[in-house]
Image 1: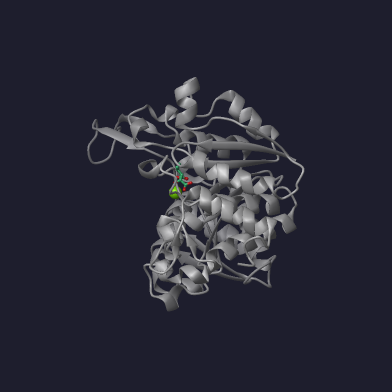
Image 2: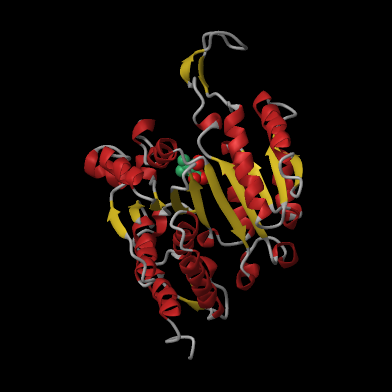
Amino acid sequence: MKIAILPGDGIGTEIVAEAVKVLNVLDLKFESETALVGGAAYEAHGHPLPDATLKLAKQADAVLFGAVGDWKYDKLERALRPEQAILGLRKNLGLFANFRPAICYEQLVGASSLKPELVSGLDILIIRELTGDIYFGQPRGRRQSPDGLFPGAEEAFDTMRYTRPEIERIARVAFEAARKRGKHVTSVDKANVLETFQLWKDVVTEVGKDYPDVKLDHMYVDNAAMQLVRQPKFFDVVVTGNMFGDILSDEAAMLTGSIGMLPSASLNANNQGLYEPSHGSAPDIAGKGVANPLATILSAAMMLRYSLNQPQAASRIESAVEHVLAQGLRTADIWSEGTTKVGTQQMGDAVVAAITKKTITKS
Ligand code: IPM
Ligand code: MG
């Protein structure tokens, strides 16, 4: 097993260090190599995704990724901005299937902005298509408007497009995933307005015929955004395109009150994957030792399960995380009256202790 470790920017380095610490106590045999990515790579090599980093990622069975980005790079030309690193990795590795679970941990029900009864027991899996849609569609650019309301005016345009095979494969991923859980898929589209999402809806409906045991419904994206805050427990697996998935997955994450808790996985057709926390690089708290490492630690667990075929090791991590929460340990983002505030390293140490065992469970 070979793991490429790409900590990136901001809190990325701090949280990835904790996840690596956890992986190291699991008695697994794996090789790992660390490389720069994002702003850190731009500073050192003039590009957010240097060839050496991309090569390392391609050769690895899995990539453990921290986060990229900092406001100070906002003025760079687009191709050099840190975000291009993650988009480049997705595209070059063909990571089309993005799994973003939104799980509300019982101990953290109070951290949600929704009423406890709406989110208690919440367990949604958002499956976002990750290599198509308006994110990558060509043509795109800026030009003088050739027509329309203001001919000759400066204009910018992007292209939303999906091919049938792209929709088919992500739909299959969603139905397969639903089979292993609540057997309910909600496909989110905008078929009432967009051709792209009429095709999406048609293809998902066709693929759904192969899965008669899974209930399929369709929802327009505006309604889905509303239902996510109105009755989030309606959802089991949500499958949608790249852009709608970007937006809805942030919304769903916040239902749990703790984006610092949510891992994600991005897989290609060979189960090679990139694993990263759902949150970003949080430059405002970088270097302070206060970031929550649990999303990254849980991403490492997803990596063991999906790409490295080590489900038992994955479960050990997940149980350890539940254990530290039950102990009342909280980083600042999830802290509340009556719990114990800890820093990034202390949280990592507590997870390690819970895995290597009983040392702390006895107290
Ligand atoms: C995400 C992020 C990225 C995206 C950015 C950083 C390019 O928001 O992973 O959700 O838009 O996909
Ligand atoms: Mg996003």
